[in-house]
Image (cartoon, rainbow, N blue to C red; front, side, top):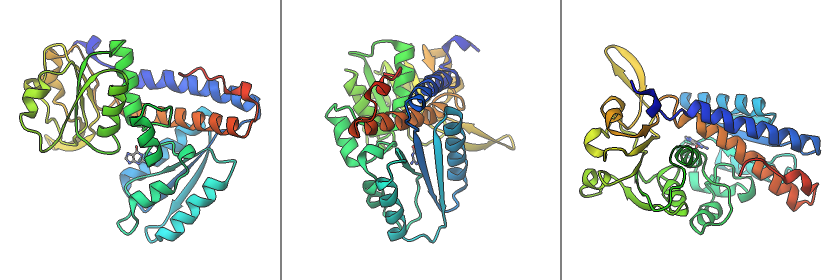
Length: 301
Ligand code: GUN
């Protein structure tokens, strides 16, 4: 395998985490102690793993984590009350509500209840709108991580044709907005797109976020394209369970100039950018309270 084509998300996330740790150290020395509240409602097994990892990584970065594990039966009113309390708590800088929520809770209502300045997922409409207007707001972690990998791999993205496959609120739409902000020409493909494959073949950059194992093979890719695979799909193959992306990695590899593996590509970037957003939120709140503005000199742009 030509490993020089591999985009190493583990190494990139370690570099981001190192800078977050340095920023946290500086803030703590100035009396600012970044804290992240993580709320999990119910017992979804994948969510439990994600939440455990988020809390472990927060500790690694010196960020205080507050864990709220609520039962599946928690009412919407109880959840909204907890979010309101966390919004009002000056010691809490970021609030992460793990998705999916149980069906009896309205996702939009719960996400909109989080104060935009503490919305480290960037899912509140104030932040979504701010991103689309190019304002300096908290942006969703997975697309931010993808942008970081693309900028490290390609340098300036200006003028490149980027194709985003998938239009979810968590990845596809914010990814398209970030690419547009970086002056790419952006095409968003989805399940109703006509000639999706032909359109994708024109892309310099492909971001696949569809949730369908190995859907994108070499036939979708222009020679020399840069491919970011956001998919994490568990499949059974030859009697074994394994994780694969939305891109058929073995088929794509000979045709691309760079590609993220699954696992070890985009996955580790999401948590690193959650930590980065938590620090950014802490700094912005300190500014708003006029606490030690010198402490707000972050090393991360
Ligand atoms: N569930 C799957 N991905 C995410 C994410 O990025 N943020 C939250 N809050 N929940 C998720």
